Image 1: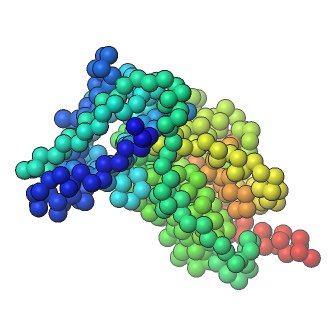
Image 2 (image 1 turned 90 degrees about the horizontal axis):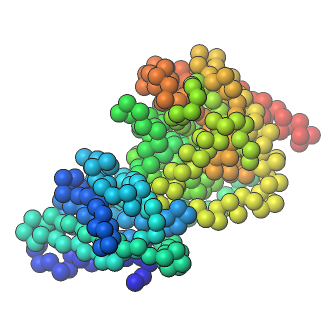
Length: 406
């Protein structure tokens, strides 16, 4: 069996004109009829009931073992993870929007499983559909041989572009800022008290964008403008494609360890400045894993000596940017973390030629921080603080670069 199962043309087996016309519309999950169950020696059964049939594809990934199902397109509203997943042979499930027009379901497998049978049955009268998968255990070698994400142009990474403008700020022109609202789509980020990080950060990114644009000194691009997943690799690629002068990733995480609270600004380092920073980097990068992105080989791209040389030139500017933003936020009242400047190996900060920082507005696991981040007035103060920090950094950076050029 091919490692990728495509079920795009199932519509042609039905003659109902009404069903054919609505085939590309959004399907809804029917939670009460959907489940993942243990069938003993018969393996694991996945049953997904949908309001209508939609095209789908299935593929597997390893390290860790995952099975990915993409649909065009499913609304997962109402699906309860704890009720849906009824077997320990699948350790966890994630579901949500992926790229525009597509939704994704990811099964985290406790051990290698392969698709024995795949059957999508559509009611010719109502258009309702049930996708049934029977998964059987397989050996590690067979699973590894068939694993791998399909490569399709335009699926996730933007087309490469060549800019004729050399990196560096122009004293007369606007600074182009790439704002990166963390997480999105299938990856909600931290979830506390009925709110999630992806929604809060998209809201704040929009508010910060307005502050920057109103000043007239900045151009602003967002890595995502709605609730869709964007891989870490794509976020960096988008910044390069936009010709960004600065990259700012926005987050508000949750840590069960210790009493983490207050805002902090992170820069890239192979060695985390503390245990909490290491845990955050692991959590952030895990977003690509749970959503089915294959990160194997990505570190090779940033290990090249030429990129290391470029990063050494960019690093002092990045550190100055982090200090300026942290100071600007502190002057607006913060509150700031006891160590407001930290380092960690965040993959999203690995652009070698763009000063890149990650701003943790606070921790949703802290009741005080959660209340602040949900408060529009507090967010307005933090947006102003980041703007003030950017203004200070911009002026100082231009002076330093002019001295280097003399």
